[in-house]
Length: 219
Image (cartoon, rainbow, N blue to C red; front, side, top):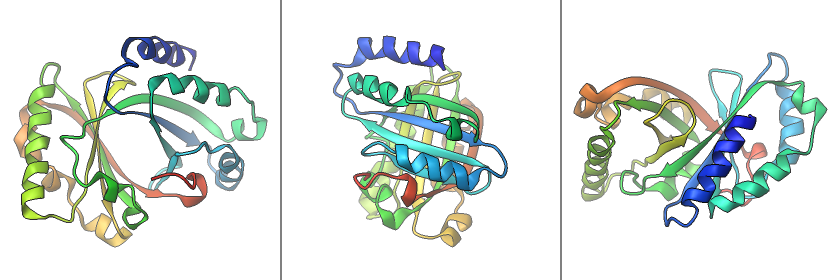
């Protein structure tokens, strides 16, 4: 954790003046049998603008925090210094990562964050180094095609800046129900054949928007 905080603090100094939008993503893996206690303790600590997501297959929670400026990371870490012994007993571990929203690759991002898209299909794509431009061009072409077709789909694409071995991209697609989520094929929705040669690894799963763990001001 200390190493991640140090890297984020350094990175903040380097790019805070940039015009792009940044997101902090917190991943909490909790111990078996601690769900109720964890949620009770966690909801009292939710910061403004945070969107909470619950993994549908694992004892895991994700929190997406939009950053108006990277300097606001300081306020996030200050709030995390307040110890909560009960919450700590629920956690196996916590992972923090910094992401850049790729607007040109995304589609109907506001719909993704609406309560009508409470179920998300997500994938973390591990791309060959040096192939980021090709990958982003592929996703941008999909977004343009969807726009011309008047598609009702939505997609959010983030590039991982800090958090594990990079380059990595997080893609999230929203659905109005669990049934539609389970019927969806991520490979076809992002046309994976178009970048198969540069794909090193892929992890995917299902999450659900958790209102009690989201701020009232969350998008």
